[in-house]
Structures are given as C-alpha cells and as structure tokens.
Image: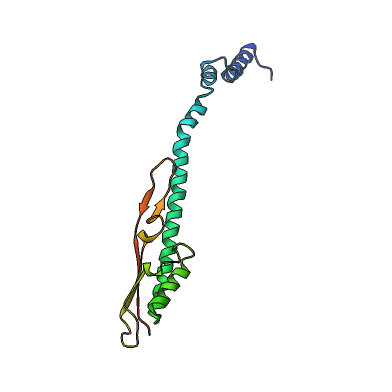
Length: 163
C-alpha cells in the first residue's frame, strides 16, 4: 500500500494548512492576538449592570419576604378574632406572629373591625395593618446606585365568626 508521491504531497499540504490556522500565521490567529483585552473591557462595562440586577433581585426578595411575613401575621390575628378573642388579644397575637416584621410597641396600628360574639355567628371580622406605620414609612426596596423604592400596602384578612 504505497502511496504515490502526488498523494503524499496532497496529504502533507492538508495537515500543514490545519496547523497554520492555530499557530497565528493566518488572519484568524492575528485577529485573536489583536483582541486580547477586549473581553476584560466588555466585562468592565457589563459588571455594574449585572451587579445591580443581582442586588435588585435580592432587594425585592427581602421586601416581599417582609410583606409575606406581615400578611401571615395579620391572618393569624384574624383567626384569633374569628374564635372570639378580644381586640387587644387579636392585636397582640398579630404582633407576636409577625416574627419582628411589625414593631411591638404600637399595637393600635393593627386595626380590628367586627367582634365575634355568640349573637353574630357567621358575620365577618376583619384585621388589617397599614405598612406605612413601619419605621421606614413602609416596605423599602434598596438597590445600590438606585433610589429607594417605597411600598405601602394595607394588608387585610377577613374571617367568618365561629363562636
């Protein structure tokens, strides 16, 4: 299986062409050498936007965690009111269930409307909390290099009286 000299030359040329592509002797190799610092510059331009996006996601996640914690606490207060708890007991149970999301000193910020007694079984009792009463003036989303975003939802829970 000897090859003729023409076949050997053709094989050698093909392998030589392939090796030149990666050694820098062609235009592709020169172009790669000329763009050596381009990726570092692109990263420097995109990194602040990427960090703002990541911290924005974290900031909104923390804000929604606080809102969800308050919503759970208000529902817990509503459950207590539905089984006949007094207004002050309902307010205190709401504060206790908030896991620190609602400040403990002003229990009057928790509004209770409708009391459950044996005469009004089946009527509604509503517990609500206005988040503008929080120390920061509401739920605040903080993102670096951006102005703070303030949200002030009123969180409400209604239950039917069971007593």
